[in-house]
Length: 391
Ligand SMILES: [Zn+2]
Image 1 (cartoon, protein in one colour):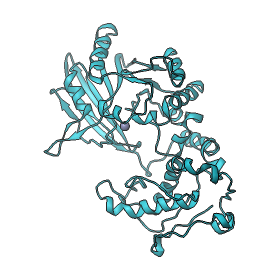
Image 2 (cartoon, protein in one colour):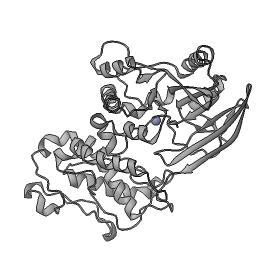
Image 3 (cartoon, protein in one colour):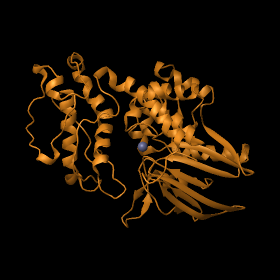
Image 4 (cartoon, protein in one colour):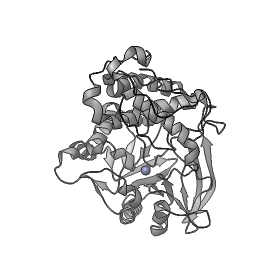
């Protein structure tokens, strides 16, 4: 089972990855064989990434990280952890695994477009296509593998005909015919049919945020490769979760609270606002999602008593199983947003706000000194979506 990068960030667990290595530990528990770096792995800087992998590795729970076009040159202190993880083989250029008598060679690249969004600091990123050519040669000739799989954090783009005909994942497959399979990421594309490149190489991508498990079955006959089947299995609330994994998540929560929320008087499961009816949120209709974005932003402002709140429109909620944003979803997403973005937007006000004593669970009027009462919002909420602030 493979992941194509961006395994961290977006929720509170990501904000505490330096302290817990939580995502990697859970991926190891779920049976992932390998992952690669996406741009978001560097959101806390190279030293933050090194700490996260180091914690997971020390706990004996880190899937192999194949990072073929990423290197850590020089003596910059921020690279020290990554350098020693590479030396120990936790981060490696490629990986060979054997299953059913076959040797699978894996490598991973961060695509050109994704590199643009990467806060890598002193980390160096080589050209993905040139690196892939080199990896194919090593895997085929030196390692004598039967199947070469590229984990490509590059992405897919639609052409004028509305089909996926462009993007770094496809460019990689076209430019390096020695690759048998490309597992793509970065563009969050829920691809229900494999893109076949050079009449041979399937390029697949399973969406985002663990919403699907992709299954690709190929047949190899000499040099001939055929896709026998390709499916996305939705991972949603209708599935019974694995009990051990659920318990591991529960065990992580107090650690995340300690690392991210406790200093400011909050906890991971604490809602900041309640939306008592469905609020739409789509990638394609920004205006429709603005209501929910405003609710979240005002909730952050009230909770932190900051003057300005930020959040990314379209990013405030998840779709429920029925395609609607449900009440429970709204709650959960507000918590998620509060976890990541509140912290980031909060730093400028931290000195003043740290003097505050928050009382989780109490009403704002009871828990905050009078001089720190939330300022009246100029936005008038319809009664049905008025934020219920808990401070
Ligand atoms: Zn990405």
